[in-house]
Amino acid sequence: MPSTVRRGPRQIWQAMIWSLKGLRVCWQLEASFRLEVSLIAILFPLGLWLGHGAVEKILLCGSLLLVPAAELLNAALEAVVDYICPDVHPFAERAKDMGSAAVFVLMLNVLLVWGLILGFRWL
Image (cartoon, rainbow, N blue to C red):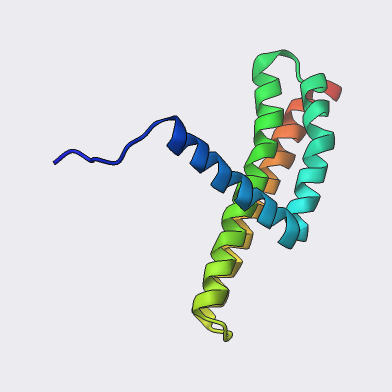
């Protein structure tokens, strides 16, 4: 049976409001997120300036945007884990460590992308 959920401008608007609320909460509660966004405010324009051609610009800037996206997911995961399991539990600790590791891997991706693109140019 087809879904009867209406999708239109009002629902898109509401989804945007919820997303902005999530960004605001993460900005208020997560120092890591604030630092990452601050670095992106510097590095994104630099990536647009240093990138030669559209592909390099997309790689330099796009790699940056993945980090705060993962940070948002990690913060959500940590909030749910803390709510469900307020005591220290090995599974809860493992989940939180894995979320943190995902952010770290994407930070390494930024270093790799920027290093390869700019490194080959300057060497």
